[in-house]
Length: 240
Image 1 (tube, one colour):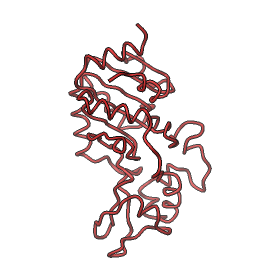
Image 2 (spheres, helix red, strand yellow):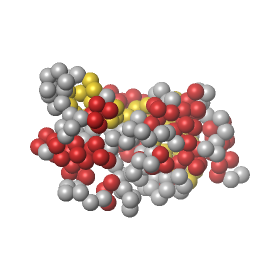
Image 3 (cartoon, one colour):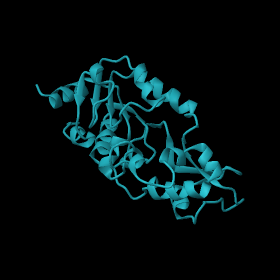
């Protein structure tokens, strides 16, 4: 029995699967990750991305933050790839109970997934810091320089978790509960080096742990199955 057949057997015998995903889930849709040689952290800007995407930088240099953010983070016409679509299919048939994602692109929802816990927030929700009015991502993308509220003129901030900011407690609790209750956990497209999100896997007490990542991770030795391949290529071979 090869590894794909083993994965198929796990999925067939499970009715509480949770998927934990990182940037590698969306790279096949054309969204760059952070730490690979072509990733956002290896591109040249006036400031390093870790500094630009911090709370302090947003507050002190909002125009430069948005110049980078709108150029590199707001990929609004990208479509879901086979990984997103297969996960939505697994949810529809009752196999997959939740997706926990480090991504902010909203592609899981675009593919049809309903239960998605976005640990780092989403580009699709934005609020005026003054009056809390909601704005969608296209309003932010189309704004000249710094997007401002069309009612009070306040600066709009995306609902993404910047460096120096904490994760949303309610989202974390729901994600931890889903991972804890799962009988199978699929971790994909993440180096498992970004905390506290990476620590989420420590709550898993189920029977089957599957890792899908292009490069080795610190958890490889603890997994029942390991695929060093693209996420979409592996999941697209699964029959639902």
